[in-house]
Length: 367
Ligand SMILES: [Zn+2]
Ligand SMILES: [Zn+2]
Image (cartoon, rainbow, N blue to C red; front, side, top):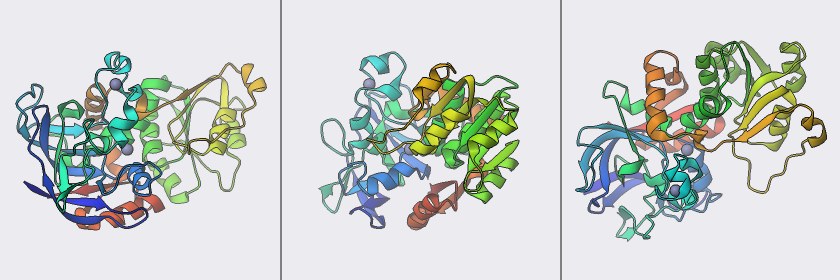
């Protein structure tokens, strides 16, 4: 069986759209016809080998579509089910068994290894295996074969072609707020960075009932969109000191909850300095490994703040993704305002628009 897919063949070069061959379906796998696949920063990092996924590879870690076939051991899904594909995990380590799959001891291998644990791949290209197990899914392809455990069933009436980003980028931002920070109605919240992850955090804080919602970014157009989506205050950190500004907005106290979706250590420090005493800050942006932040620990002690480091929203995809769909259906999580769709043939434009910020969340659609 064949499928059109976007392949990365060398660091820093454009993806190639070509035909890949699918291997026979394994008993514990399902075949999904992808309706849409979100473009996540991880694809660019992996293409350029900042994450060493072996090339050639098909990326894509935010797929959603319709189940077309199930392996003989699959019990939880049936042909015709609509599914969002979440991140992959081993399912057997202590963290997985405790319902903390984002801390899976095999997280890196299962998401960035590119191949199944036995080193095989569900796809080949030009007669040789290609990495087709990126986040267990490699969903920049019209058809994918994935492990049953990463597929989360969602209601058929939801717009399946748009739901893929709920499996990674939007889960990361919304999970950091709903699962970790948990602001209460009437609280104050600041988000640093209004990309897809930051916007998901902002929407989640608004859905939680936080009433002071501050968005910090360097892009005037993003801050304008943040206003439209519920930010009560915006701070352009290119022209204003965000810490001083946040303190001014909150009457000198600082915010009760803050979220760093940027992943630059300077911003992380600003986030800690913008927090009120006993405030809680979360980092979900990914600084390069080895980065160190200069935090005034001596002063921080007296604030009794909390800082959390959050991967994949610290969420359990099977519980959290349907919750985000329900919030969306209720009008409380309007993430469709963040997306723009592109056909597979324009995937390189979609990646460029994601990097430049022209589109908050590009989605590759197949139809
Ligand atoms: Zn595990
Ligand atoms: Zn991702």
